[in-house]
Image 1 (tube, rainbow, N blue to C red):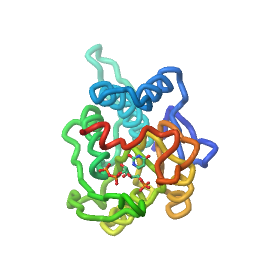
Image 2: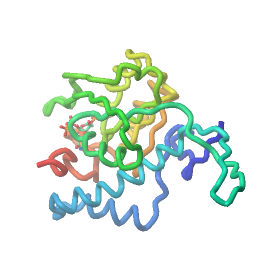
Image 3: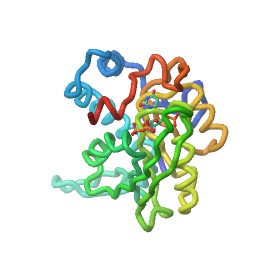
Length: 222
Ligand code: PRP
Ligand code: URA
């Protein structure tokens, strides 16, 4: 089994992977943070970041040696994918990441978990979950662009574990995280892998990520 991730563990620990802060990534994040950015551009530039996250997430899945013969008649000693995967989006904002996953993994199965934060208390509430029957045998790419207090992510992971998914087989793909959210998920699920594009300064009084980008779901879908 080989691991060949392009990014390595961050200062947050070996299972918290932060994308390299390239000029491109910083420019993309600047565009989606800008309050003047309209929906069309918000979707376009978020999708570019989502693609980077999906590619990086896939890099953390195991591969096994595989040899093929090329049309030149020569053997090539490469690798092949090992194990099956599925996506699980935390609705609604996580659904924005489904297309990026499908672009990379043709006909991937995608489960859904509807969790909404209470607007007043910021506490997450679970409404609904529909997941592949054989999810316990799969690696799960859990999709949610915003990790604020971590409450929604924690609840979604509890649902996956109840279905028999192994903690070390869950990869949480996320655009912007707060330090508080990272610490909360790491404390409860140390084997979970988090792949995020950026870690922001913190949370504001409304438990929104600051500087953040506001409400991701509203800006992407409404
Ligand atoms: C947002 C976001 C996360 C959650 C993050 O969803 O997409 O799911 O809040 O906050 P937390 O880490 O403090 O739980 P929200 O519940 O606002 O619903 P939405 O997806 O419909 O925007
Ligand atoms: N949900 C969002 O969309 N943004 C935040 O900053 C926090 C929760």
